[in-house]
Every structure is written in structure tokens, then in C-alpha cells.
Image 1 (spheres, helix red, strand yellow):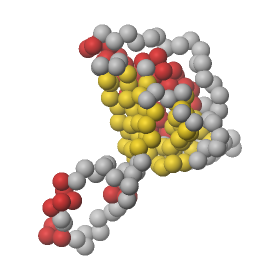
Image 2 (tube, helix red, strand yellow):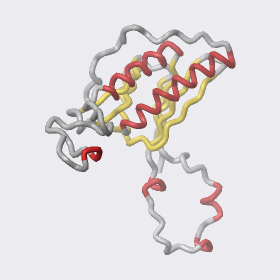
Image 3 (tube, rainbow, N blue to C red):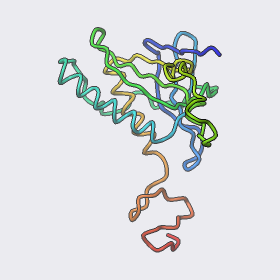
Image 4 (cartoon, rainbow, N blue to C red):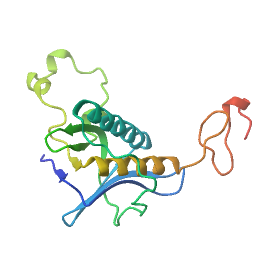
Length: 195
């Protein structure tokens, strides 16, 4: 089966956003450029980690290569909702980051969750049944991917928006840190009493 690489180098817009009410939100990365719009679904924790690791990557690029990294913007320039239609191309299984020293850009790659990640070994296969060729194959070679190349300024703006999107959900319980539903929740710190 052929795979698609959705490359935006650079995109007109690259943002993290959500669809749905707090507690039922679906998170997306969305890239727009050249008349194309690509949206890929991912988990909230992946958005949070992507922002955190991008911040670390920019700091390391500045330290090691002397790249000029802008300060975090005081106000976020892109506060608009996701572009419509929000059609999920694939669900992200793996995220990759790199810094291209030659062009002083950040490369973000979102790779689709593969069937191998979803497979569960039921123990019915012996070691003799495994093909030698399967072990040599790159596991991500046949998976769809979204590749985006950003300037340090655009990466910084993405980080700030991603952090705001993650924080915009349900407020955390002050005792246990779990999200509070509008009707409250069963707090483990109160021995299961409704809070």
C-alpha cells in the first residue's frame, strides 16, 4: 500500500487546535499551504509534549549553534479556530523533531499510528514463523506522515498556542489534579466522595 507524505516547507499556517466541548475534545495538528489543508488527530498529551520538546529543541539550537531564537511572544498572533473542514487524514502514532542547521529551521514530523502498534501478540507465533525480511524493514516506511518545516519564530508561536489549547480544557481538582467535570468528580483524595 502506498503512503502519503504531506509536506509543508514552510506552511502558511501550522497550529494545534481542538474540536468539541472540554472533556470531549479531539486534538488536531493542522497545516495549510499551497491550496492544501491537512488535519491529523492526536492525543492531548502528545500536543503538550510536542510543545515542551520544541521549547527544548530551540534552547539547544541556540546553545549549540548560536541560532537566534526569539523570545516568547507576549500575545499570540493566531487565535483563530481550526480551518474547516476538519477532516482527519490519520491519527498520529509517532512525533519526530529535528533542527536543520543549514536552513536554521525546525522540522516536525507526525507519523500515522501503524497496524503494528495496534497488534497484540497472542503467543500463537513461534520465532521460526518470523520472516527475516520483516526484521530489517523500517517500521514507519509505509505509514502516512505530515512533515512541516518552521522558522524559530513560527515554532515559538506554535508552542504558545499549543500550551493555551492544552490549558483551555477542564480545570484541575486542587486536591488530586484530575480534571473537574461541571458536575464535579469523585476525588480519590476524599475517599471517593463527590467533590
